[in-house]
Amino acid sequence: MKKLILLITIPILLFIQCKQSPPEESIGTPIKAPKVSPILSKDTIVIADDLLNQWEVNLRDYALDKNNKFRVQKEPFPNRHDPKQVDTIVVLNSNSEQFVFYKSKVSMMLQSAKITNPKLKLAGQLSLGKSKSELTFLEQGKAVDQIIVQDEMDLMHYTFTFDENQKLNQLKYVGYVD
Image 1 (cartoon, rainbow, N blue to C red):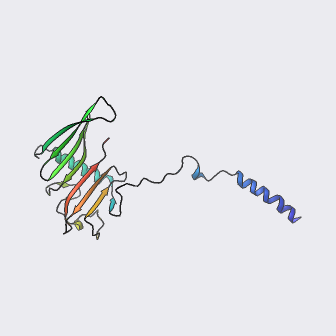
Image 2 (tube, rainbow, N blue to C red):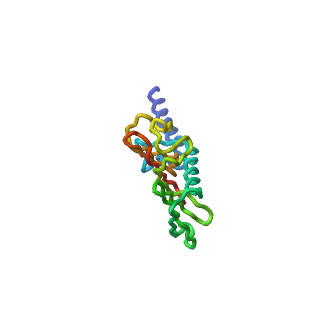
Image 3 (cartoon, rainbow, N blue to C red):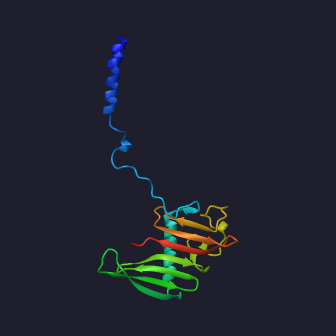
């Protein structure tokens, strides 16, 4: 009798188990691996977008300040979305700074910058000549000469280069322009 009950119960349990729907997490779109930045390394730090955005505003305001004297170069550039429209790449140069802007009919966006001028000040008391220990957003104790700081979406990043005395001597910015 026990054998008969087992023979009937086991197939029923297997049948019921096979009929159950898959776990909820596998329903719908497949889970994708998170995007890994090509620049992401052990020396990359991801920090709050609001500070990085403020730095971008500071760079833009500094570059477009009429009191700063820059050599200006302009080159036409085809618009990616409208083949009939021609935009402009605007490069502002000095001995210690270079700013590259993408200018369309509706906006002028900072595309990149390279700074070696200590008079430029950014939000959070950031300026060239500061020691690595003074930059509170950086992980202290790393003996590297370059650190990359990026936003969470990897739409912009800053490369900080330090000299042999661990003083910030160059800042590079690369932003996303579409």
